[in-house]
Amino acid sequence: AQSVSQHNHHVILSEAASLELGCNYSYGGTVNLFWYVQYPGQHLQLLLKYFSGDPLVKGIKGFEAEFIKSKFSFNLRKPSVQWSDTAEYFCAVNDGTGGFKTIFGAGTRLFVKA
Amino acid sequence: GAGVSQTPSNKVTEKGKYVELRCDPISGHTALYWYRQSLGQGPEFLIYFQGTGAADDSGLPNDRFFAVRPEGSVSTLKIQRTERGDSAVYLCASSPSGPSYNEQFFGPGTRLTVL
Image (cartoon, rainbow over all chains, first blue to last red; front, top):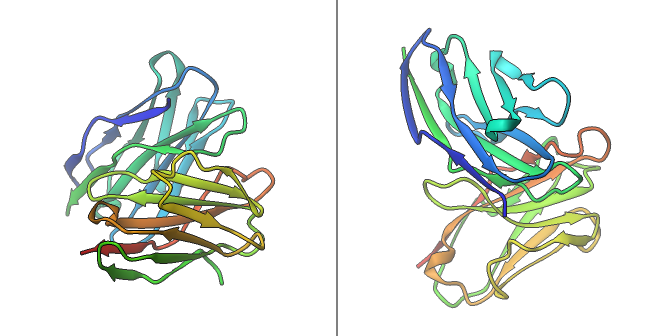
């Protein structure tokens, strides 16, 4: 069965600090990978996704993630965070051969101090 | 509407009662998903519809949970004989056909509290 592990439940950073949120998944086949974000008081929304091709994926608001197949990882990064990045971030995976059942990690709450 | 809508936004019920939660997806989206999110956890997959049919209901925890999408648009999640452990936020998402088929658009959720 697929599973997703997010290493940090809570992260506190100062503005302009660099961010890296860890995500590892367990699934032996082809995968689609996602990062979703939930800003305070808002719905979950897609931040970025990997289906195939270039393993370095760029998303909205300066975020990027790198798929490392050998490590079953899809870590999220941002070189310089802003106060407005305060949110909860969820890593998710589904079967890349056409499956729609999506498995989410437990989430990482990021708080950025102004 | 422009986004996925869910009603009610909050539902408080007593143990043993029956509840229905409604999801109105983005117009034209063919796929519809239900998730349950408990405090401190990520969304937990319940069921996914492609059109009117439930393509994958492997996440439904037991036979007290049932979902329908009779006309391929609005969906209703039905929970019978509610238990306190059913308390959670129930999320609905929809996705289009075509190249963005795997991009899910989420609604605001229904917060269910079973007393």
